[in-house]
Image 1 (cartoon, rainbow, N blue to C red):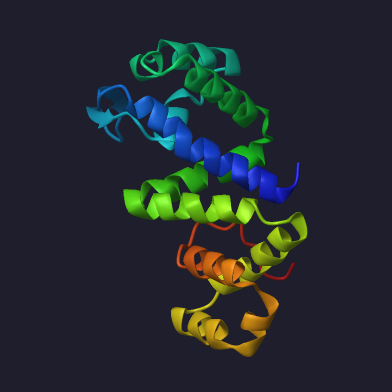
Image 2: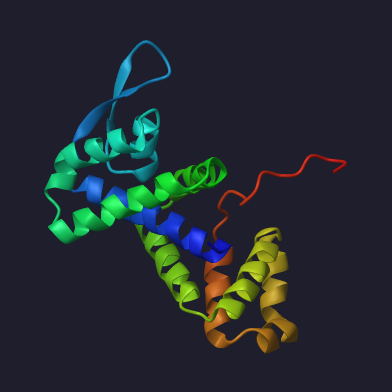
Length: 191
């Protein structure tokens, strides 16, 4: 599976699983807190759902999903799509699952309109030809390492305008405004 497809899968699961669980009417579940007290935390976020169920086998997670009241209220086609996404998540290697968890935690910090903008921009990126996707991903990684002023300089440059189409420029401008956690943990100095 290519990196853009893995990223798409992670973002899809991260954006759709919480929607399904949130259909449970804003219910709250017990979530172990840092101390001896238990705190109520509303369900509805994929990262929370996975964290709450991470000690389970994939089969136990599947049963927990099936028994979730919010899940039960969804149409059959949506339920099946979420079952499949959970199966795909569980088929990822541990590093890929960890990256997914970091991304979910990042997504949870965004406002709903920011998540929608991110989702739309990623969908637009996914619709580009594979070679262009790779080129945009490479530029995006570079842009995210720059200061906002540095990005603005790049956006104004002739090279940027001749290298990327108008659509690609829009995708890069929108997505570079977000700073998700890095794909890979930073390398140790001296390596």
